[in-house]
Image (cartoon, rainbow, N blue to C red; front, side, top):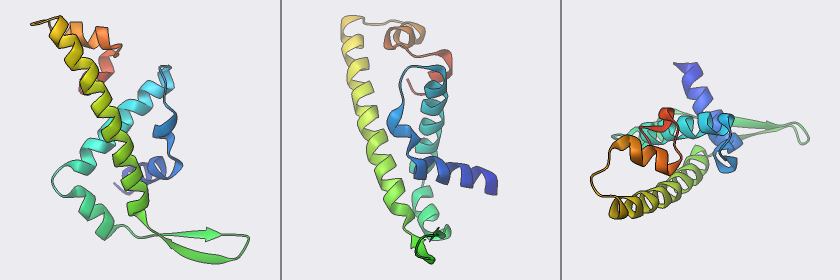
Length: 121
């Protein structure tokens, strides 16, 4: 479980979610970022992360250890993902208006989503 949380925190700290495009690695990153987003917004998980996770950063050049404010990273991530979701919802809504009563597969393919991205849709 610790590895999972550390993976999430590192993903947020490295801000990998900001540079995603349509290649295979980015699709995996999009799926991962969507999973993290859903995990954080579920119930009060974000509050729990802020309360229970304390991290420190050691800057070698000045030999000081500083407490890291995790909320800066989670906040930037949530803003980014919310903007992304709004864009995707707008695209989907335009598609649905033009193509009423189509299958989920149709919408997924028209949006350019891979099968792994079905939950995002």
